[in-house]
Length: 158
Image (cartoon, rainbow, N blue to C red):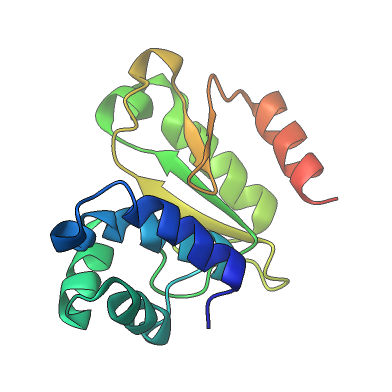
């Protein structure tokens, strides 16, 4: 079950829309639930559907359409590396390999200790800052040299 604090955040999102358009807050509700739970279990999506007053399948359609929603457990730190062509040509593949080697996992893998999940991402809209990666869907990391990757992993591993 979602906490009272999470439901209050969802209520603030719902207040932005007319009563007959509550479903407009579904993306924000999913994001708040994911921050709290770490991922979106079917039961969590059902709870959101019930709370907002929309069909559960409609909530699931939104959650499965966008790649920022985790539909299975992920590590505490989810690192998404942009591998679109501009980033790939500007060090994205090297950056991804550096992380793979450091963590001992491949894309869509999670470390045994549950600390890290590594994902491949599509364009993040920061081609000029390549290579780029997104940390936990919230923090953009730009110009990721080997040194910056090592420092980031060391900081996150504390």
